[in-house]
Image (cartoon, rainbow, N blue to C red):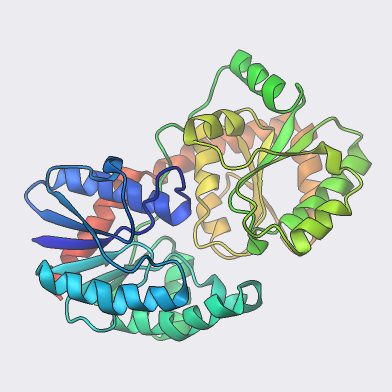
Length: 375
């Protein structure tokens, strides 16, 4: 079988949510199935690190897909031509984008429909593309994979797709995420937080990650607790301008907020494992990989009671209303002062994390590919 794959998000030192999904699943599938050929379609020069095995053929498809017009040209013309040239049996797209001009059977991985629920937080030029194309991608797909039951039902309700052709594959967590010794935690805190305890947020600084309310809640926490605990923000400031920046600048305790920028997984594990708790209070997620990373690092979790997050967290997190800053602040207070609660959440996380692994994800995604071929 010849499997063509959209690998445009495999970017050296720039892997984020969907990029990690692409990396972790493809690395396992290509090695586990040497009898099949994989054609990786990149939209720019690629790193050899991403050519995982001898059965992978890397191909650069033009133009570089960095803007809606170029997305259209890349998928409907570049990918269409490449699928024909390499005689692909199936096209796997880990980010959900498809060619509408090909007859090759396609498996789209749709991670979430945040743009359908909160279109105004997306720049108009991108919003119009998503709103116009994604329901067409869903209709075009021979089969769809997604990362939670929540998103599966969201796709069914928004796009009228039969649930019978949607496979839930969940996400996993990088093998590097694990607990560290107490003396190592002390070193990490000395280096990054002047020796102080801290809450940690991990992810792109996007509006739906709810950082503005997290900042307001942290101010309330500081006022009520008189605690030395800080707030650490790990991620790129790509969407910093606007409400997030304005809210931060208005904070009374903004000097207690630490920005680290993007961090490689080995450093990120140490930061996460040394935190009092992960504060992941997005108001929309298709999955929420940092929740599972925290389970593996054995760090307590505060997360939201909406969309996919209760499904992923189960009983291993303190759930809050992401639209209520007092709810978030109360959870921060509880988890900062109640050691028994914190330890119980960590124990529950040890059980919960067994549900999620990239090996399981890759196996389920492979099954979805096989089911796509059969249709």
